[in-house]
Image 1 (tube, rainbow, N blue to C red):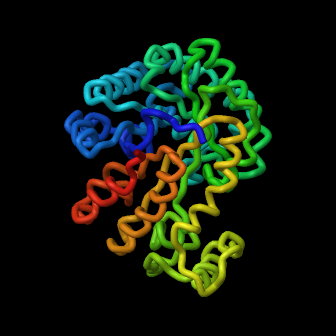
Image 2 (cartoon, rainbow, N blue to C red; image 1 turned 90 degrees about the vertical axis):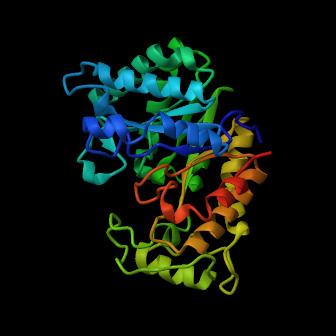
Length: 344
């Protein structure tokens, strides 16, 4: 499979320009230049920068210059420390992966879609000159399968408009079910050589999202170690997520390991190979409520498969956000995690 050079191992800067209170204090200081030096010292070659539309555009459609200046500052910090960057539109007018955001209508509203296109045209005009080190991710985590046809039409038009401004920009596209690796196969081409197919992986969510307070069906006292046998995964996945299919191909008595990720990624890998484009895991990680030894084991298993297939990846997330890689809890295992994720 085609490898995405310069984007082999990275980290998300979640909660900085997205999923936050947008206060000046937050935008100025949640992540600072010194953090980029740390990320480079860890051996990362890129960052993924989630950005919400409201730091870039007002409700009346006028641009918020401060937001663009902030993105440019991040680009320059990345350049200083030899890091590439994925610019991820985490929320757009009329759509957010988080239903609590009260954003709706994007996939049926031509007005919202035009705002989306205009925003990407503006981003391409301003930052297309950095296309050798900045990639554009059109939208974070389309949720429902019902949106697929509209999403295909929208991303094709967005690509056309961006290409008219910056022909060589690398553009990332994800699929539905929150950018699930299982739905990459449903993305519709053709794709040119500067396209990357993106997915997120928090599977099995029973482990990576145990006691996640934002998941309505997740019990506040649910605890799971990793690895665990498939019979337990099947039972608990049906009980909590009402989905017993994910683990059906595996024997009950077997214990989850790298073979799970191999089977999980197989169709997406075939799809990327068929289109002759790279595959990229833009988010993955383990909640801060999980057992630390289990956390290390999960990272090693998913990394074994990501690195074997040369799938670039960015873990979620650098600081806080319930998944903080800089948390003190990670101090004893951080180096092992980083080492296991290196693509040679």
